[in-house]
Length: 262
Image (cartoon, rainbow, N blue to C red; front, side, top):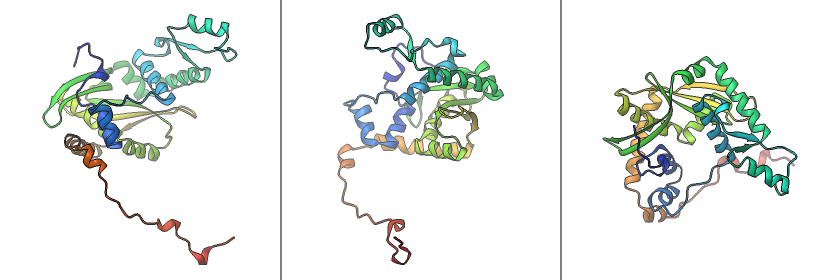
């Protein structure tokens, strides 16, 4: 693990976020992580809620969050509004809806035996920096580790298993988890089982634990190695030098005159 004073997100080692950015948009990856000409994207409201959920879990409940609910009837442009903002300048201002959501999410985490037990006994926000034989210098920050497992809390709007597994692939969560696996294996000497707990950000705020199949993680690790090799050999000029590609009309959009009705 690391006890260095450098901010985790400012470090130069390979991270899961960097790999995911490359897989989704190599050009953005180049400008954010290689040339550093672009600043990281600012946090969205969904990301901010996710951060609060993680901090709540890490601290052991709502009481550890320095939150204040913004009154619905206050106008921040007025003298009274500015005075209120000054009074609570050290707190995180949230809406009444966000406050209620966080309370409900915590209640649901506590109602789930698997989640409650891991929150009680697990080690949260585990940072580790290591030299990987295949990947080079790496870093990770795992949400939770405990007795041979690594767990990731994932706030999401996806409600079904099918929707979430598709999101896992589309957003490269599985490849990110593969880097965590290598980090935990380096830290503990053994490869962990991988769990993801989805926390719905809307609706009823359901909490659902999933264990990721080991064969899926094997495939994700292979894609991680391929991605890092591509990152090492990335050439922006070649990536921008695209030849014209002929595209064809999708069959589903083609007119079928015998079926046309008006």
